[in-house]
Length: 229
Image (cartoon, rainbow, N blue to C red; front, side, top):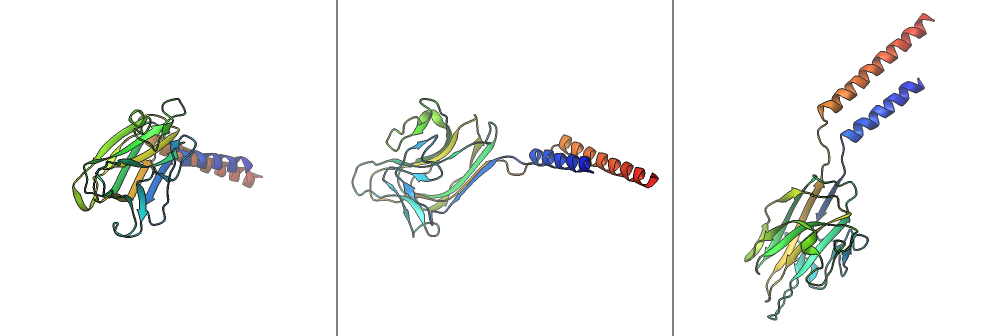
């Protein structure tokens, strides 16, 4: 009987490992978010929103309520800056997919949204709060324009792609800026990375089925021995 239980447990673990994968989800409406003045490295500034000074959370005026605003500047000085978020990417492997949706308002020129990865190697391990945001150009996986001249809240087209390497940290970064007292900001960020519940491969199903048949045969044979005694 002990052997039967052991086989059952092993088959259960095999099935679970074959039908599940690591994933990461970030859903943010900025209703309770804090934006920190912090760099992003492979060991710090993780699991939080970071910026230098221009980004702030605002409780009203978003879509529909709180949002992250790139603070209006009444001067003619361009103060472009990043709002970024990073997380440790253990279990997120090469070839996994990412998908990002968000709302934005941007009365300035085009902005940019990035998704990228950091490694614990010199030159690829940091995004600074200070322009030109050290190594951003070397670490981003893909980018997409945030349309400028938009004076009402709009939904960005889905930004999706494939993770192209094994990273220690993955990040998303929103770049906005420009001169003048105009509106710039983001809201309702929805990021999905990896796979949550892939369909089991035929070989996996066959393995599980064979195991169950074997268990049924083993149990019946054992029962027949008991009766014969």
